[in-house]
Length: 274
Image (cartoon, helix red, strand yellow):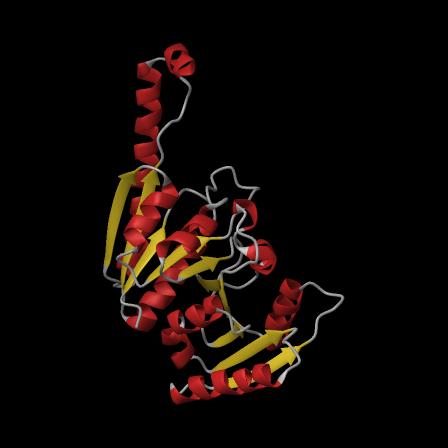
């Protein structure tokens, strides 16, 4: 079960969607929710600090503290209104590093999809860093829309990799309580081993009382990410589970093309593990 949920909170418009996701899961699993707000240091070259002056920098820092407290009031109000056990933390440093530190003591971390149109959004690159560094499942929530349910109908992106295996087992609390889980393999190798593997993962999930349907498809003209999103829409799922993987280890491509596409175009929450 997810008993300890960490949510990264900021002043972006998407924060309400994240808080709603935390409320849904906390009520589902009777979990404790920790809201984490990170005040990042003001990074300026030495000549700029001299030109601006210590007093103005201090004023800026006090403004950041005010914004953090304001976000905390919203978070605590939402949690308290639903009787959800919660804690509010404010810390300073790099957001990704602090989320990773606190995430080590959590069952699930909730982050936002990056929104380049929101000047208050600080999520660009955050999901990449946290997924690759925290060792815990990360639920990425779209920055638009609101969810009434999370995990009633799940699409599991399956390719037999270590990352997809890890994501499957990290998502087991949700998979076991889902009404239906669609196991989706895109472009599986045409050999006996892959067909056996598809049967085996369905049998494994069935032994955990997971109601599964296994599908596979060949996507030649459409991006694999688009294929997964299209199937998710067709099936009416409210959650996608997938591994955070890629062939390249170059930092800019570390999560891979399929993962990157889903993060950019997602319309339902995506639970990721690496």
